[in-house]
Image (cartoon, rainbow, N blue to C red; front, side, top):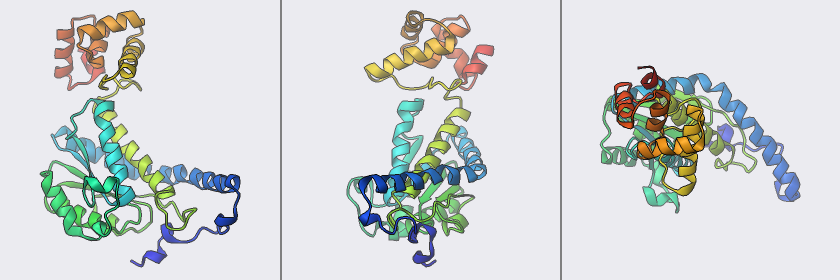
Length: 297
């Protein structure tokens, strides 16, 4: 596929005078273009939902969500991955991000890394890819060889695959079980896919991981009941979460958290089921860690 024909690479006719715009004019132009991104993502919701089903199935059978990408796309996958453990109380190994050129490429560009599909094979093998995992290949252009190579390797091993691209009829779409295409169109700065395309990829990754964790019982209502309270701010948030979930006061929530060794989910079940912390923990284990099911048991 000729790179120059991609929507993400064509010139934006609304910003042809970018270098002559005042700061305010330039920023308003960017904001106008950014407002089109959410609508483009919305059109892809059915495919995003299908991907969530695939990822949930992987995690339920002990597999992992593995983001794979190069450049900005890979960095966005890594960013989403590292936020999952503190937000949802998972182990770091459950959701991981792989970046062409390795972790050092997060801060310093490794030129040419994205052009080698065999690098993705090696990176996936290094993390012990299995058929239980789901690999999400992120490529704004939809044609990155590193991502194509990784998706093909994952499929060959029997792993589930999802592609995310910001152009239609993307090459990566033909190498994945579920293809998510979010055509974001010409960038304000021609070809700079860290802008609208990057924003779209960030939104999609947020949707994939958040919806997956919600389906896995990692939230109660819209509360982060499995968060790790690792600093003063988060301890306060955990107390407020327990108080909200159990419809009680902060002092009662604090006592329940102390009995539950700081685990908000256990403290909530303790209060709602009027049981001990030990019984609350047992209820959660029997209910596959789902608060509503544990309380109803």
